[in-house]
Length: 291
Image (cartoon, rainbow, N blue to C red):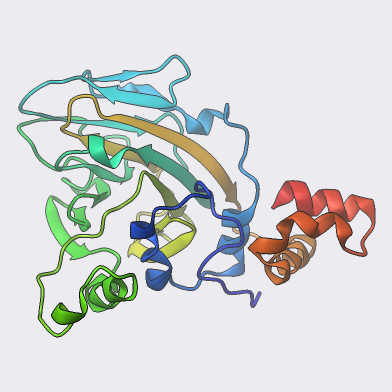
């Protein structure tokens, strides 16, 4: 299955993307056809139970909306709080989207996955998801990966190499300062982040603005139920969960691969011309509603 992409055909973000987020295509890594299809396929219904936070696996300082897709943290001091999804997975490739306003994150804002027994509350301000051996997290403020209570590498891995180049390319450095070494600053992670869990391969990665940033964690436990999870210390932080799509370990169907190839060749600027292709109406509908 030889299709490889670093940016999938139709991003799941708003069309009006701020210039500061255009650095992410430079950090994208190629994806397999299985992942590309999963990322580019239409999202499942917003009412899917896999889009819900759990009312049982939730810190008492998180309050859920009636639909349980939004979790809001109470303004409690000296407390770290987490919430897990209602439904976890033991196999397959799955993609969730976490929406979290950058202005409402504060410090220790973490997204990732956890087992069912990972702690959901702690005293003081600290990383919870990734703060033990039962969870794996990405701290959005510092770009640091966490597991086993320890900070690991920065993520994405290529950030150190490409960040200064990217900021030059997008005009964030003046011509007089291009030869002056400047301290590295964390990337500003936008509101929407896709969490990509391949339970079959035992990997967790993240995608931003249509760009898959690569594998963040490997060797995740096999056959163990894993749940999307977040932790926060900021009062008023509102975090929304949306399950987008998933697939089994089986190879992609030939029809899906052909459809993806057509969409790729059309390009994003010509997606509205699908109905003009010399194809039967049934295939027009397939391309319009499945990608």
